[in-house]
Structure formats: C-alpha cells, structure tokens
Image (cartoon, rainbow, N blue to C red; front, side, top):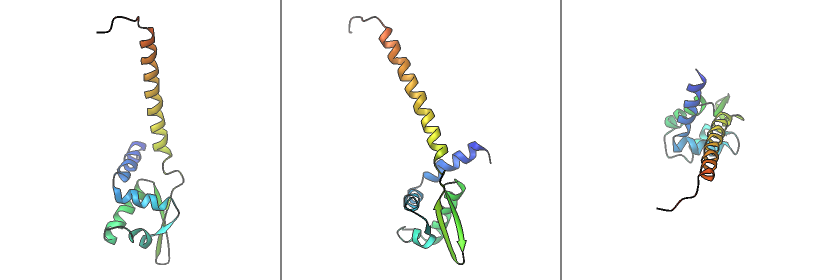
Length: 112
C-alpha cells in the first residue's frame, strides 16, 4: 500500500460517526469489542467491520488474549494527518501574507 493509499484510508476511517465515537472512547484507554459495542446502536458484526476499517486506517491496533479482543489507539495515529493539515495551514498563511503585502504596496485610490 502506498503512502497516499494509507492516507486516504485514514480519512475514510474518520468519515463515519460510529468510528469517530469508537476513537473518542479509545482515546481514553483500551477497550474490548464488547465495551465498544455497548453504547453503539449497531449489531456486533457492524461494530467489527467499523473496527477493521479503523485498523486498516492505522488508527487502532487490536490484541486478542483468550476470547477477548482489545483495541487501543496507535500513538502515531494522527501524525500524518496533523502534518498534512499543518502544511496546508502554512501554505494558506503564506498566500495571505503575500496578498497583504501586495495590498499594502498598492497606491490608495478613490473608493468606488
């Protein structure tokens, strides 16, 4: 999988409200599938599908001990997205700085 594909999977994983709710819960600490499914208003197979998408998006990891599968957040889950957003923010700020500079250099004229 290329970097672009994994980046796309990250954003796709975040596109669903159920998955974002699982992320909010897992941000507080690891949880079993049962703990994650309890407040969700979907069936267990759907919960497992959502969790698989989060794993494929490199947001969570799971571990199975006995019959219990536990999920936890990856420590670096949002680094790629954060870096991407920071670059866009810097580019946008630079563009506004150039615009402000150009406007400051314009001679004042009559208002229309």
